[in-house]
Length: 431
Ligand code: IMP
Image (tube, rainbow, N blue to C red; front, side):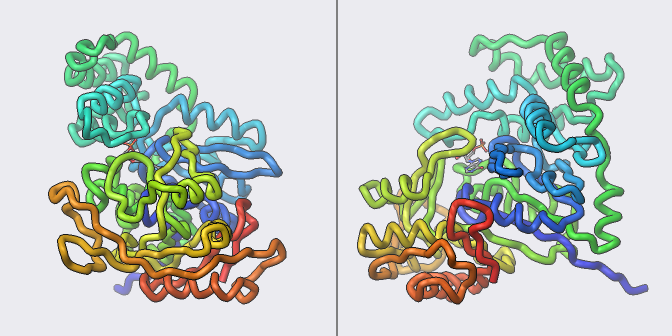
């Protein structure tokens, strides 16, 4: 027997510390997709979609839902705050009709329970000087319960009352001491009531998406996965412990949907023409001076989910992950870095570090242990550029911008196939 896999999955993943603008390329790729999936993270992620001139902020529902031919699925790997999901459905319903045919919530996805949000706050407080700077949405504690095998999943809402109460009692048994010592009191009645409210609000969207995904894979229909967070925030391969609690690298992003690697057709790394990070953790090219302020202001680097000002710095090509098999790069903010270059008279790109006395092109994994921050070695571009509003193709870009792109391609060995040259999704050059 010969197998006949049809690679038809396009994944969009952040390649640094998140907020690289996945929404732009996700929206472009979803326009002719059959299925659009979210597979990791929760409402710690966020992007804004535009529909008929309206701005719609989304944290859970894949933005691809705005295209009439798509079905969108929130897969097993996602942890779901049901009230946030319900509010998003209500908001989307103002513009399109969100039916159970258009949106499926996996019955195996875990629910962020109200106590997870408190536990996130409490655990951050306990970490004291070593705070991660989480989004305080209960993401980590929910995944912890998943690993402990005491999580409450969407399908649990359909258990008998007695069986659900037993599950809630077990979960609460693990947490009530720490909650109560922090003045937070929950009982099984309140949690059962919460679950019934959730069932009432979103129950009709809950189902098993496997047959739908299997059918699309068998037919070779286009499937787009909107990644969440980013490679350096991955629990396994990111900057542990300053990372999120899911595997948001390209393999984990596929795994969250239960899709095998043979189906990957395109793995798109999103990146900006500079770097930013929220929360704690290593950031070798971070700028603490007016250069950083300029990037933050011109790039509007304030969190969509939390509103926090982001840490900003020069583009760091050493930090670009080298083993993930990215097939394409979506480079955003090419216009912004050009303006920064015009204002400062230069643009810098990090191409190696000096770390522990040696020059290296490998991102060190032990900065938490050594306490040493790698010193970036930069390639410097003189001046900057302005991209005219009628620029529609790569050939129309200023030569300096092309040189900047060439450096990225040479160092990463990945083609820059999508280029963001303005704030709107249409301001994208596709090569
Ligand atoms: P958590 O995911 O809320 O547990 O936060 C863990 C770390 O990941 C913190 O440093 C957060 O700031 C960061 N983080 C989580 N989600 C995102 C995101 O979507 N963009 C950027 N950083 C994120």
